[in-house]
Length: 159
Image (cartoon, rainbow, N blue to C red; front, side):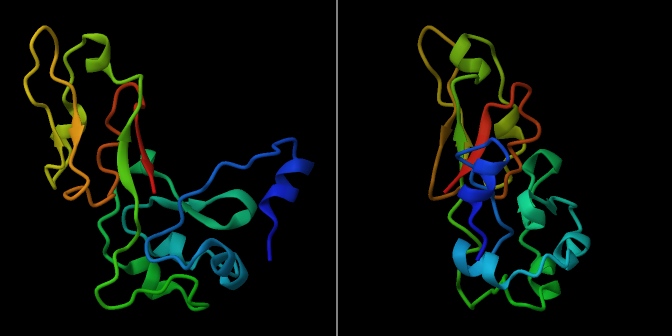
């Protein structure tokens, strides 16, 4: 089992940031035990958002685009570190909008909502200022389509 905290300590990063694993990844301990770092899932991703992360383990980089939940990474995973069960959600990720968001500073921007196919990001009118984005967690699929287009990197994905 990989001890990310220990590895981070020796690299001068005592608290490693939590990496986003590909969809349908096993829980982190099981994932790192099973994943052989073969990189088959990286090559299988048609969106090219699955990249080698810390220690060579696959991680999702939403700055490169969105996940379409096609399952190509799962199909390519021979050690079964990624496993899709019938009816199982790909992950529990949801979009989160941080304090750098332009409308929170009085600047009109609706870019994240324009890229959200699920229409999970709304901009209800607001008296005295730009409409602020609101995320409907029931509609948000966690695809990450809203991350890359944000001009100030205010949108992140969190579980």
